[in-house]
Each structure stands twice: as structure tokens, then as C-alpha cells.
Image 1 (cartoon, rainbow, N blue to C red):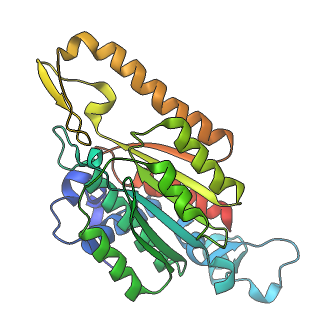
Image 2 (cartoon, one colour):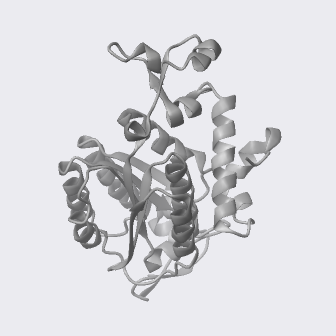
Amino acid sequence: MITLGNDYRKYLEPEVISKLKTLDLKARFIVEGFMVGLHKSPYHGFSAEFSEHRPYMQGDAIKNIDWKVFAKRDKYFIKQFEEETNLISHIFLDVSKSMNYKSTGSVTKLEYAITLAASLLYIIINQQDAAGLVVYSDIIQNYLPPKSNKIYMKKLFTELANVKPSGATNTSECLKSVLDKIKKRGLVIIISDFFDDADSVISAIKKFHYKKNEVIVFQIVDPAEKDFSFDRDAIFKDLETGEEMTTLPYQIQKSYVEAFNEFTNKIKKECRSFGVEYNLISTADPFDKALFSYFTKRMRLN
């Protein structure tokens, strides 16, 4: 375990993490920082209970009570067995060209998304759950089916480290093309900017929900994409089509922000209406915001 000390918070900041050389090191620092934060927060004990225990319920065998945990917390917890904790997870990662954008921050949307995906894989596999990876743009670029061993985690990290932005975004078709490969219900995590047709994306996400999968959506955006805070004449280029447009940002800022909020709110509202966990994540946000969303969803599945 990495020793972080009292400055653990900085290891959740994208600017700090971006300076680390390897993806596995980034994931380890983020996860360790997150776990230290849980121990220092009102959620103290959450991480230990999450990984190995669940609360005692009427009908559970008394022989399975973990008395060491009871001595520490004065509550009854049952030691979980492997079959209770095993979950199959698929992480969908959008690597389209629009994900290659950054304004004044230290990381692009894609770099943030890759690091988030690696951190989630690190947690999932270390919890003895199975994790797979789907890399997509307008087509499926690679599909690595779920496995739960740490050697396989290195293969997943290698795939993530070699990702290059390419193609347009077609989240809907890519999600649907993998749907039939998921034979056992589990957890589906989608990481994208969703700069796509909102209705088709929502329709595809619903199909996973209808097949009894739990779904978490992370919509990754750059701060400038949220507030459009450009203060001079600018030429804007579509990273996927190459189309350019010259405009005075301050003249359209209000309309842009309204349209952006309408777009993200539509996805959020539709997702939450059928139980999908939706998260709007800025590339300036510490990574614990996204990780906590995963942890709370995983706890509900125990």
C-alpha cells in the first residue's frame, strides 16, 4: 500500500495525477487516496465493509459473524464469501476525437476518462469481481471480456495506455452491438462526453437496464464546455468533422450555456427516471467524486 500521509487529497486531483508516468501508478494513487479519504470521513469503515462484509440480517448463520469487526464497530457483520461478492462489470470507454479536447486544464477529456477507467478496473478486480473493457468511437475498436485476475488487469491497463483518439461518436450503435455479448446481468459503466444524439444514446442505455443490468453513466466534460468562458474572438473547430466556425463567444455564451444545460439535463433526467446512476464530471473534478458514485452503486448490489 502506498503511504500518502495527511496530503492524500492531492492524489485525487487530475493536475497532480497527470504528472505520474504510468497508468497503473495513477490508478493506485487515486484508489489509495480515495480509501484514505473514506477512513477520514463520516463514511469511516465503509471501505472495509464494502470489500469483505455485509450487515448481519435475520436468518444469517451466527457462525459467519465476524467477531473482530463486531469488537471494533459494535455492530454485527457477515464475512462475505466469493460467490456473494462476484460481479461482472463492463466498462465502455469513448475514445472518439471529441474526447481529445482540453481548454486550459492539465488533461484532455480522454486522458481523464482513461485514468478513471483504470481506477475503476483497479478497484473492481481487487474486489475479486470480474471486469471487461469496451473501447469504442463510431465502431467497437476493442472488446476485452470480463475476467477477475490481476494478470488480466495488466492487459486492460496496457490497452488503456495505448488508446488513441479516433473517429466520430456513435455511442448508441456501439452499445447495442455489445449488448448480446453480455450473457449474465451485471454492472455496466459508460464513460463518454455523449456528444451524440441524446435520444439514441438514452434508448441504447435503456436496453441494458431492461436486461436487468445496473448502469452507471459518467459524462465527461471540460470546464470550458460547461461555461463557454472564452473572452476573445475565436475559431472553433469540430474535432470529429474538422468543420470550423468563427464567432464572438460573448455574444452566444448565454444561448450556448442554455443549450448545453438542456442537453445534459435531458440525459440526466432520462437516466434517473429508470434507475441509471448519472454523473456529470468535469475534468477539473477530483477523482473521488466519480469513485464514490461507483462505491455507492456497488454497495446497493450486495
